Image (cartoon, rainbow, N blue to C red; front, side, top):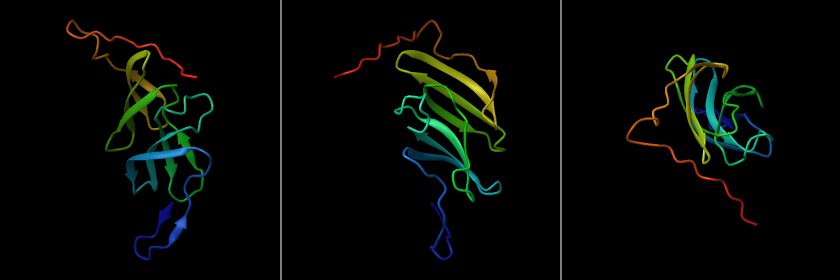
Length: 130
């Protein structure tokens, strides 16, 4: 929800649906949008994974998926909002580090910092309890 800070009145609802809008990653006051993590919105992605979205503050459900991989994402948005450095992984997948443009397209894959002589990634198998 977007509230008027001067009056405290509700201006408009920003997101809607049966999914969770999680922590805010960054607010762009000039562009009137914000970046946040959500989960459970995309049917093809595990609902426990954090996914980065961009939403316009003045329009209901004007949401753009920025990190579409079926993994949990940790992203850093550049000061200009033109680039996103994203690290994503699952319990059974080694972390992948990429640079994305403002629309979420991967423009560069970064070196994997876990691949060195002192540290080896040891993937775990995912299990399901019934």
